Image 1 (spheres, helix red, strand yellow):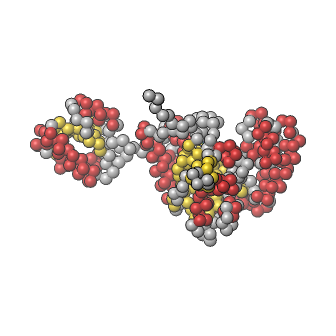
Image 2 (spheres, helix red, strand yellow):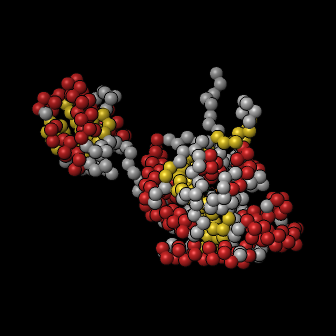
Length: 426
Ligand code: ATP
Ligand code: MG
């Protein structure tokens, strides 16, 4: 016999113990996005490899080193999506959702990158992504950042810092690129192998290097913000003014270049100091060139993606309140008559009490073993129904997590009692 098959490195199961944590974030995000009129789009996990080569850029880490790409049985080159924007734009063009209209979309699901697995960095991870199409002005950057800030508040996540930069237009970036190549070429001997490679292919990415040995050199590099044209500079000033009006604090960060080629003008990132090196929890920006680039009519766009695992880790560190999914009430029975009666009583209670989470014991056995399971279920209350109670039309209510007294109540009053004493959040 060979051993049990294991999961793949960097690809994890999400176990029931974490269900409430995931649900809390998913429910809050869904509600906040709806509060701003965003609509959900459900996108495929597999796309043509070519899509990401064109959208993300051939000489990015994602496409060069991290993408899961393979030939399918028909010989087509297919990739597991490493990010969601490319597929969202592809779908938007394909279904005519982008042209001549304002479109606010969100999606979520797993993304795949062949990275070195570590805390906060996995090969399958999850994102919530939001994209807005059709708005050239800065209002939409402000709205998206305000929406993300609202989500942090709703979740109880505090202490994030908002990093903000502008990358200018593609043309401005092209001009700056030469300035940067000149600067780094003068200091060629101080660059590491990765940066030397990027010097020819994608010099802006050197600014994003995580190598501490390069920090000084990068710190003294010429800044893109000083090479912006007047329209880009005005646009950026309006984004900043809008955030200031809303009281959203930010830090200007001229080193924030983002790992994807498609960004133009505003880029931003929410960072935490609680998770070590994996400090980005939400990253985004404007990508006015991408729709055109992928074969659609030119359409301005702004979006962001949140890293779910990192946000959840943060919520655990900050002890954020979680929505409850475990049963609030657990029903134990003794005797055949009571057991039979309990089945229909439980159904009736679920019919009558809104959002009641009620678990009926199905394991049988002694009262003691049923109470053990009641305790393990996480429920706050046990309803106890024995044959004597069944005969008298009564139920005992026994608190499981407090010293409050046990009480007896008529079955016909039970639904009303539960509705007032067991709120859905309980
Ligand atoms: P990093 O610099 O940490 O590699 P990134 O710039 O590659 O991040 P994006 O492509 O902007 O990340 O993705 C958006 C968000 O998705 C990130 O801010 C992060 O929270 C999350 N993320 C990215 N890669 C991973 C991963 N391998 N595992 C877990 N979360 C990730
Ligand atoms: Mg990365």
